[in-house]
Length: 111
Image (cartoon, rainbow, N blue to C red):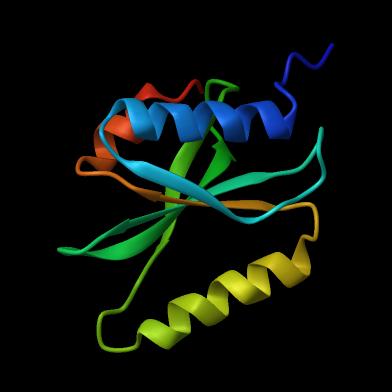
């Protein structure tokens, strides 16, 4: 049995979590309502943007892991990566989150 939360509910929970931590979140791209994949783009004025995606772990859980960081010398490349990622997976939800402590946000997400 798959106990996975429907994607639209997970997205809503991530948005609320960001807001509870004093941040802001918005949906950049909507994927499939129930079974879509969720990716989080974290932005901060002082740091390069990063994308976190769920990845299978050795213990069988699926945790959010940083899969790519923005190159400050070539910011366009990161945007192009997000576009390619979305083209490869039309069911992908992209959520942009602006929080002061990205590690705290990611740690608070269930694995």
